[in-house]
Length: 73
Image (tube, rainbow, N blue to C red; front, side, top):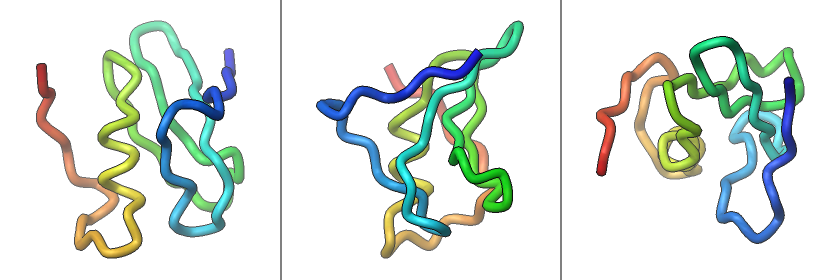
């Protein structure tokens, strides 16, 4: 199941193609992903991780796409 992220939530656009991500739900995980499947840009976690997506998609970040983020709070 796929959900759009509301416009009032601060969420960076995809660094590869510039589109706004959406949230996908699977059995155990939530994925914040670019709708363009060619980008293969996503963050997968047990909760919706928009903070991790924002860190991954900052234009000046030096983060590798496969880096695991620590859970906060």
